[in-house]
Length: 141
Image 1 (cartoon, rainbow, N blue to C red):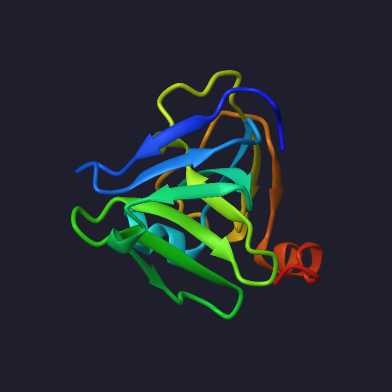
Image 2 (cartoon, rainbow, N blue to C red):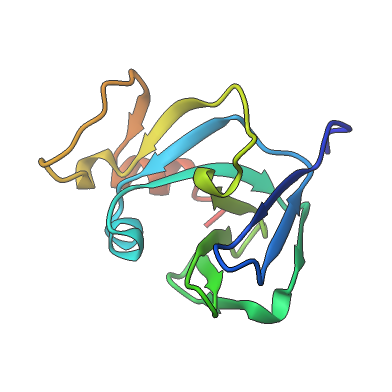
């Protein structure tokens, strides 16, 4: 964990408050069917590790969305809070939850073969297809 400032976030209604000590500023964008269905578009996520604290955790509803991950949201306002890898317990959280993050850089696009033809990004990033994702993260899924 970093000794730097604690990054704070909350859901829209304020029922859930989040503190994260270590956020990777190199965020990822996921184009998988689940992320696009969950939020209506790709998920822009920062990796937060396991050092995540929730205040108002009784308002967090967690959905078992796949064999390797679950998704969490506020049961009161519906704000998307995280997807969590089951094997490692690592949290990936929407970039937009953290209003004060600086130095962000889009570093990777996941499930690039699932990205629909109606949008694309100008950012030059690495991309991984569905098959590449499952091979690369095999020990974490």
